Image (tube, rainbow, N blue to C red):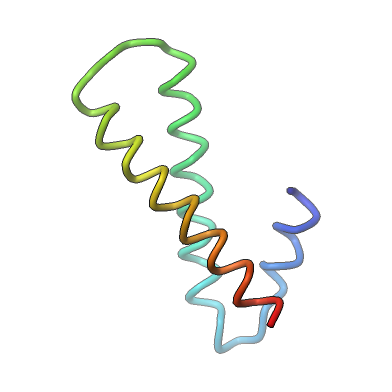
Length: 68
């Protein structure tokens, strides 16, 4: 995933905003993994999980659109 991540960051200047948003989503997923490792069931975790799922879907869509 890291080489793919580097390729997406090297985007034209018109897409830098999307790349920044993408980086934030990646950070969100890393935070989600950290929450899973702590193993503390909270209401906040459910919200983070939903955000994580949305982030994954949008990352997949972004990756597919960048290849076309």
